[in-house]
Length: 115
Image (tube, rainbow, N blue to C red; front, side, top):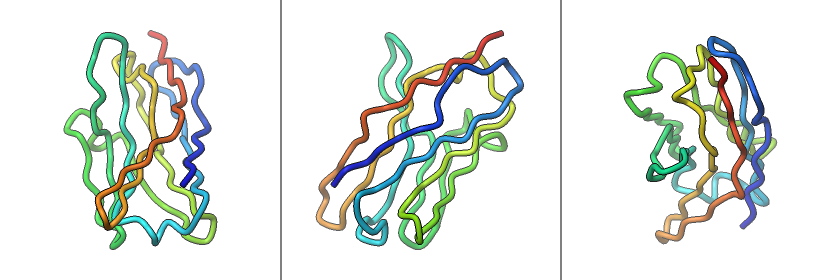
């Protein structure tokens, strides 16, 4: 399984970015897919998650600003990030979880929000 993230970059506070995670196979093969982030000196944290039934969950810090979605035809999961804050600066990782409990990670994409 390969997960390839894209869409990161540098944006001013209040701006928006959309991250993409393209999977090498059908995303229906996964029980859930998620976005995590890790800032320097911090632990990796869950940002948003979408299950195979399209149920979504969000970290409290991003609720109302970020939205996770999927395009099953393109085997891609997205993270739309609006009203970005400097504290959103991190490397964002895509993760998938199989029904058997295996997890897979992408290589990460850097998001930097300037004040």
